[in-house]
Image 1 (tube, helix red, strand yellow):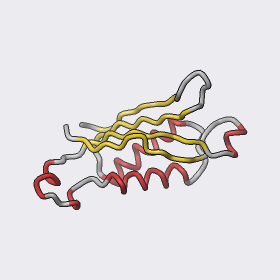
Image 2 (cartoon, helix red, strand yellow):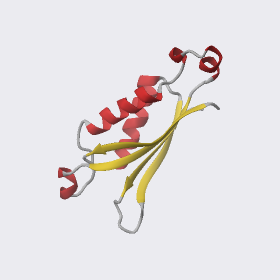
Image 3 (cartoon, rainbow, N blue to C red):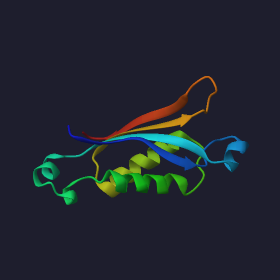
Image 4 (tube, helix red, strand yellow):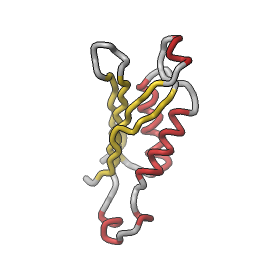
Length: 117
């Protein structure tokens, strides 16, 4: 299976369940693996046939930073729904990490897979 990858997309947003978290910006790091047939863009060397990782990245940042969210599980589902619906991706894996959320860990996170490969 061909994939388009985005690694450690940095999103500054209001995220968390505690009252103090609801008034500050925190960083989320997002990894995406998106199923995409790369044969056609490779053969044609034509951008129109590619899944544009810059466009996907900008859309995800806008989506997740538009309103406060409590759970990173919600973030992962929002990203999956957006990418599958708006970019016609049939399968993806989304990992959302929240650095510094637990003092004893570098980061905590969730990972989901949606769709058919």
